[in-house]
Image 1 (tube, rainbow, N blue to C red):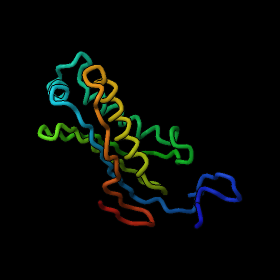
Image 2: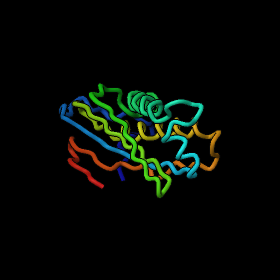
Image 3: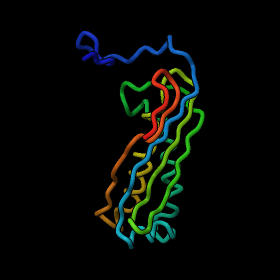
Image 4: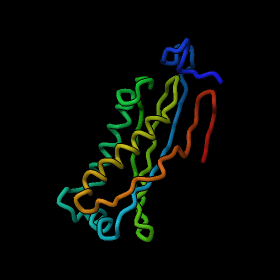
Length: 155
């Protein structure tokens, strides 16, 4: 098996200089599980921390932009768009964090979308840990990607 980031037992960044600039998009999501009381406080803005979801949204956007600083072999490139959204399922006591990242570049934005979800979720956890130590961040996954040589992926 050939490992693209390893040559002669030395780690290397992939050379993308010959790849075409194309439109690329990736979406990711993860779930945060709460107690009923904690979830109610978060969605009704009844915590002492303020608007938790807006702070998490902002942090998720920043996380996408900083991915190359966090993941050693990721390329640093211009991001055209980042969106973070939340879907609340009161029955399951879950907030689903959904990210979408776009670029016109020669490499994909899957890691940026996954990082955006991760960071937004961690911020929610951090701001809610005083309410509930049993919060679970779960099921982080890429749900869609398009563009580049490998084409379209849809979960």
